[in-house]
Length: 244
Image (tube, rainbow, N blue to C red):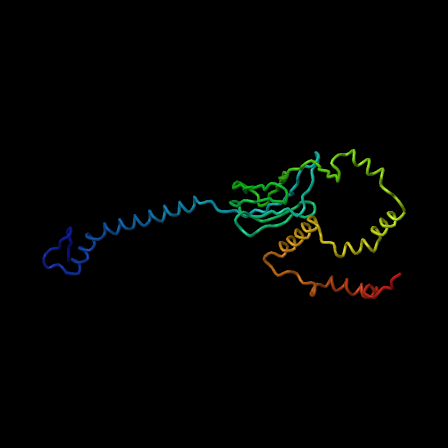
């Protein structure tokens, strides 16, 4: 029989048993220490990972409004964007919007002529849907009305008005200037004003946001559009109408 005592062996002992006993008593403490350190790192790292809050996906819906003369007015085409990203949407004619965000993000409400409002999504939301009723305030200053007269004093206007020669030719000129033909020419060649430009720009933005992240819809493959076209063709809507 071979016997091992401590780290040594008696003479005549098998040398394999000697090597096994030597490595066992020499490297076992170091291995145990390495194992404890590895387990501690894994446990500590898991604890840190558990402490990091997970971002929650929430659908935010609501309306954007303002106050005018003591009453609530809905704001159409208001921009509702996620700060720092290219994601966003527009409100419809009733001021309604709906967008999907994360709990760590910030919504920006903006309309031309109103102050921007920033809304931080709360981290303690328990539901996956949330309603927001956002009020915007005007960011413009209304100046008093300024009336410009061609005379240095209002008294001159009375004298000029009484001395004015009114005859039938002026009435004929007014009728000609207000005729349907003159109005049609003005509509055709007169450039659009700022309000029309703003409405056109907002409509273009609405169409761009509607197809954000996808291919824009094409009515060539729209069955409903084809149905309307065929019905209009049967009714004769595309025939030239005789001028009366």
